[in-house]
Each structure stands twice: as C-alpha cells, then as structure tokens.
Figure 1 (spheres, one colour):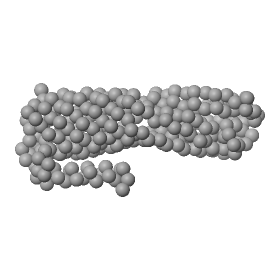
Figure 2 (cartoon, rainbow, N blue to C red):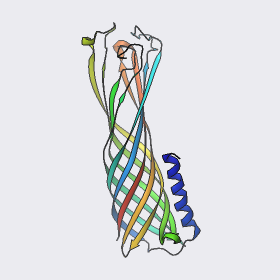
Figure 3 (tube, rainbow, N blue to C red):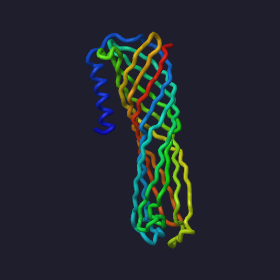
Figure 4 (cartoon, rainbow, N blue to C red):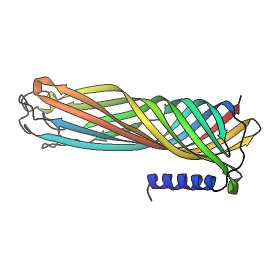
Length: 260
C-alpha cells in the first residue's frame, strides 16, 4: 500500500467512525489558534529542449525535442496561525477556517539531462542541472464537517480546502552557448531563480478533543499543489527550453485552538 492509499484509508476510517454515531457538540463561536505540521513534500521536475525551430543551431540534435525528468521528496515543517468560526447543524459540527503558514525545508536534486555526448552539455542537448524548490509561505481557507467518534470519546471530521503557496525555485547549469561544439574550457555556467505560485487543493481528516475553552486537534492532510511552468529562450541558438514543476505533500499536524 503506497502513501496515497494509506492516506485515503485513514481518512475513510475517521469519517466512518464519525458517521456511525454523532451526538451533541461544543458551542458555536469564533476561535483562534496555532498549528504545526510535518509533511512529506515531493516534486517532479520536467525539462524539454526544443530544437525544432527554423533557426536552431544544434549540430547534433536539430529538429528534435530532448526530454529529461527528475524528482525528490523530503520531510518539511510548517508553523502557522489560524482563525475560524465553528457552527452546528443538529448533531453535526462544521467550521470555516483561514490560516497563514510559514515553511521550513526544501527539495534539492540533480537532473541528469539527456543527449548524445558524455557530458550532455552541447547546444541542443538537455543539460544536467542542480535544482531546488522551497516553500516560502502560504495561506488558505479550509472547511471541516464532522461529529463525535464514540470509540475514541472524541470528535472526528473530514476537510476540504484551497491554498495559495508561494515557493522559490532555483536551477544552475553548465553548457555550450556557441553555434559550434564547445571544448571543456568554453562551457558557460548559469543560475536562474523563479518565484513560483501554486493554487493548491487540500483534503484530509482529523480528530479533536475539547478541554473547557481549549481544543487540541490532530490532522492528516493531503495537499495537491498543482503545477507551474517556466520558459527559457536561447534566441541566438534557436533553442526553446520549457520546464515544469508538479508538487504535492502529505502532512501530519497538531493544532491548539482557543474559543473566543
């Protein structure tokens, strides 16, 4: 069973227990709180070198597209502030919550590239790259609905939400920028930085326990970041290099909430 299958299995168990026997819940009202999350963050980096343009200068791969792919996953940590409103409908409770979160940790890997020479760094080849992706900050809106879980003597819920995630993407390369084949001493290096914005969607499940006006919450969440695209143009060489990133994460978090 892979990570995504385990996520949906746990979510279904929490949801099923809550549906099984709901009872009266806590008072309605506004609340504030703090949250901490540990996430398994993963991303896939796709890069294509397009040599199909009429002015392409590649002596090796003119008229061809050369693709390469790399991926990485790491554990990252998040700290955030939350504020929301909890209401009830019969034996169900619901909440609408906004949050602002900062992130620590980054992905970092090496794209091997693709081509016909041993170094894969002549014009038209897919040059090797060192790349990294780091979440910076995010903010989101989450809706939860749930009820009491009798076997745990607590409350369970499922959730869905949307997030805006700001991230920093960096890549560096060494390659030939001449119309003829380069000797090793003629290769040039470059570094590029991108500010990426992901429109993400989150789903998950959790449990919470109330102690007077304080509520402790544990939550499992899956966040689909979606994709972002970049484009590098080497007009003097007739080469286009479109790239893309796809990211997601599975996180386990805890929150401390105070009723106002």
